Length: 194
Image 1: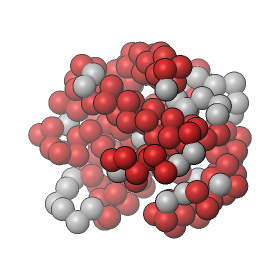
Image 2: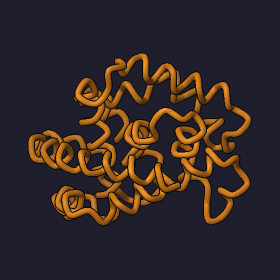
Image 3: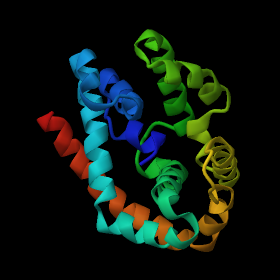
């Protein structure tokens, strides 16, 4: 899953939200230097990633992209799934996405010093371009893929990933909806055990 899904699946505890968001940059046991609630978010993030990567519905989505995107198929599907979460946000939350995103950015700004350096550098761009809200539109997704294409030094076809989404839009949305229902339950249960 990508940023929006990880944040959403964290629930309402601020530390868990921050931990889940920064988790990709925290390797191995380095998470243990953070406060308990942030550790919980990092561990939740890792559990979500493991659940997602091994799930048959997600594998079906990524298989559709393997020929064109190879190693990056999972990354592409993560962004697609965030698009469907943002597009159908009202089915998942009573709070409008515009407000939800704004509150999240404020949370990060309030906890700026706890964020890894990479996230600190990224934060002003994320806020000014309103990444979380940009997931709602195909245009926003297209911009995200083009930026990823330019940022990754290895040869990739991410600049064409929007075309694959448009071509198989209904199939990807159906798979997301079925998978996210299971992922939401998994995340809620995992939070209770952490």
